[in-house]
Length: 307
Length: 186
Image (cartoon, rainbow over all chains, first blue to last red; front, top):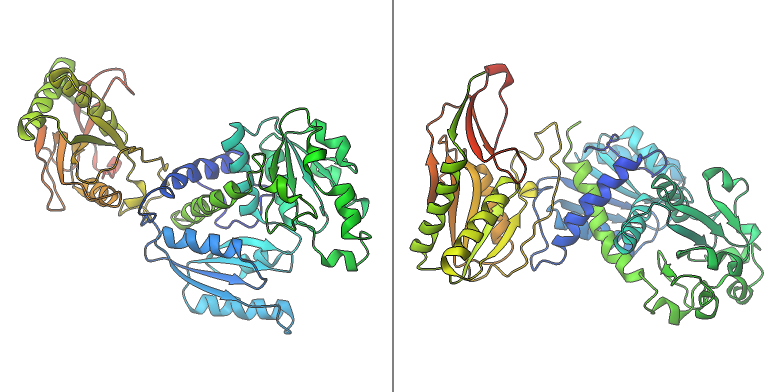
């Protein structure tokens, strides 16, 4: 099995077979993470550059670990938003990458479409590590991996994504991936944070947690960006927590024991109560471990295919 | 295309029996011996050897499976991406006598990859190499300790090992492959 594209820009349009191939490959890498020597040689001699134009701890470390464990040479570049117009900066950066003969680029940028743009102007394989509110494909993949590990299959699994759907790249990648794999996906959040016509992506919309909890197996709880409060999209964090915060009391009404996911970092007791985040319902730390295996699988599949 | 059977089911069984005895003789029993097969045919062969050794010695030996895909030296030159599978070695290799098992020994590149993969898992006391067929044409200084059958071949011939775990019969064939249809085998 070989991926059709030489880049991973998003999960939109990626086939069921391709997603399954990535998840299967990740199983092999997951085993390597439990070994005393967690390093294998397939990307020896390849250079990967991590371009992080937006702050990130988890994703950047996860990608770096994945790259190093595949024996690639790694250069990381982190910067806060620059005052230079973003399109211009990115184009310049792309030219520099070309000049330095780099094989693969991992990019995180606040502008949607930045990874697509980069893939059109450089020869290297491009992996999207989050582009604004568009997509975060490796997060979607690691969420699916974690669910498949726990439930065996994604077919018919009932997953609800809770929170700020409008601004969430995690939500979009999860929706594309999970619906492709045959899961039943729904979203739940305040009306101001759910995009109009999201039903067209094949998801059901709920505005009350109490209504959706008895109907699902999994809640994927999104981080609420504290800045959104200032823009008036919800009145206060307290009110958000009261209506959309996932707590033990609310989850107790589930028909089956519910699984809690969160892409991190968690605002404890805002979108998710602290006791629930640390409970046996939570697979949050498993998501983090699996993230390294998923990124190794993507880097390996893109980095070793000849096109 | 000419195809000749060089080992049939009966001699296949006898060969595995003999190899099991040789392993026991060389290592003075099965103490500290573990058998590691290289996917896919090496794995089947490893399991058969292990059950034979158990039959002879009356105690079990550990069996592991090694996937060498990540260690191949031709990983990037290939048009078809080899399917990555898992290594399943559930015991500590450090201090063990590892009998590394593969079906065919050819250029030696697979064994080179397997040795690297194996030493990344720990430090075995000793690694021995067992192959069902040694067909020559080495490209690396590698030699087997236990050989089922040495088969002098020309480089445009192909050795096909069949085992009932995956195929219809237990047998080994030599096949003449025309120049243009030549297949790269490691």
